[in-house]
Image 1 (spheres, protein in one colour):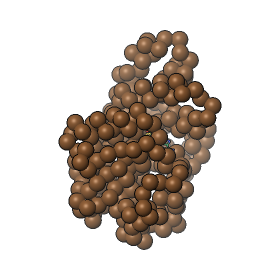
Image 2 (image 1 turned 120 degrees about the horizontal axis):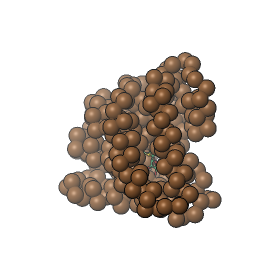
Image 3 (image 1 turned 180 degrees about the vertical axis):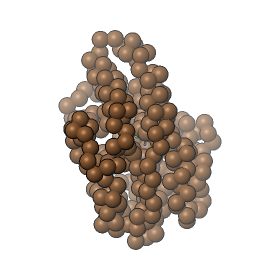
Image 4 (image 1 turned 90 degrees about the vertical axis):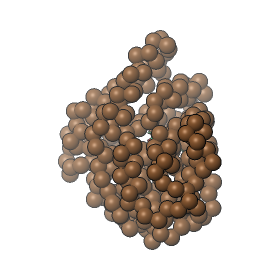
Length: 264
Ligand code: SAM
């Protein structure tokens, strides 16, 4: 999950082919970050005013694992947006296969630029494990203009569970995402950005283990063998394995938290 951010930050210096490799790897799994259908549905339960006319955006949608769950459990039109065209192609193929393409489509775009939506037009902004690409606070502040009054935002974000934490995991996060913070601090940021904090909940462990790490583990060996000797692939898999090892060691200190807010 972190790797996608590291690579996209450096996108001016990395050869196109490297991106293709990273996309090829993550295209083989349903999710590109921690989460589960149950967690998506649980977050959706806090959002009370969707209708078939509702406009929903899923920012940093990846291949759309969570978007399809959203579409199967909520009315309205959903637009997924992601930086990587390969992910968007898979997303749209899946929407078609599930018979959802009449109201669910994805487009290539960047969440850090002007979004392709009218001001005050969206009823719901969704973003699972992706707001870190713009930064939690900046994302909440900038995306607010696209929501109508009373519209909702639902995002999952890396968060500390305790006031203190061991140096090894602290240093790891500081190297990758300095905005990781405690739940009360994130809730305060949401309130300061002009939302009523409606709910927060910690994603259960199986969102990491069963739904993210296990499917990735299954494809790693074959991917390494296919691209034998490729340094980028070795680095990608090593990064993933480190992320998994650290999660198992320090999961009582951090995880992903869903934050749901209502624009006032
Ligand atoms: N939401 C998906 C999920 O939960 O499976 C994907 C999460 S993945 C950790 C983060 C996603 O953000 C990737 O699909 C990546 O391509 C996308 N991304 C990175 N930078 C982005 C940007 N500037 N604009 C839009 N999407 C971006």
